[in-house]
Length: 315
Image 1 (spheres, rainbow, N blue to C red):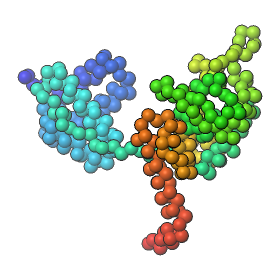
Image 2 (image 1 turned 90 degrees about the horizontal axis):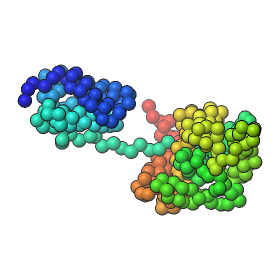
Image 3 (image 1 turned 135 degrees about the vertical axis):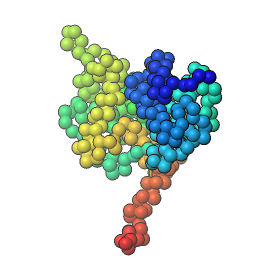
Image 4 (image 1 turned 30 degrees about the vertical axis):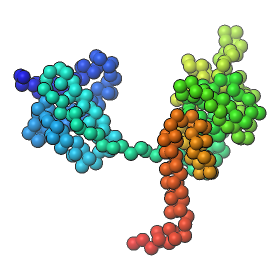
């Protein structure tokens, strides 16, 4: 085998290949470039070329990633870049064997979802203001999300046909076309009734100034025909500021997490919660037990008299 080209040329060849084969975005290509150049810099410092590196060389590189304080997610991304790069070199005949075959990514702990406290959720509801129609729509969106735990994609695409203010449940079609029933509490039903009275305000105007019919509960003049996820997210950021909550802590998904965590904290059965959330695997639902446990521990630490006394005695 002839001597391999310098590392920079190999990286460029790899980037050109994935750009052509996968139509990779420029940001993705730049991320691969940075990761591979980082590895090349380490190997050169150790007296080894990128194409000549063996499994032990790469394991030493991975070990120092953790020593540098890089998160497991970043480490895993760099290892993924190396695996794809060396697989490419092997398939191109640049190297005789792939040195990443036994290179393992670090275990990544599953991050606990962000949630609002019940008091914060109440503050959000009372912070809604502004134009009457806009306020009615936002209140309806918030109450439905918090009362039923809908995914944001399910919420903004709800058909008008499911909007029955007197019903205690709503039929929702979720992932994979699976249908499930989600609950509507008194506040959600009242908000839905108030919103339906002003819903025509959000319908598109036709050529003769007449409002066009829409099959969506939350119609919009947007191309999609319904309120977009992005617009709902923007509305939440605005109301978070009014409620005195950092905008980064409030999103459509946070409302779904709040529904699940507060329900579980109130004694809900895990299997019932799984059905309400539309999870196919109960392991996905079990993450909320960790959130509830974490919240309980934090509550005890903050409010228990012995915990407070211990904090006062700390040097």
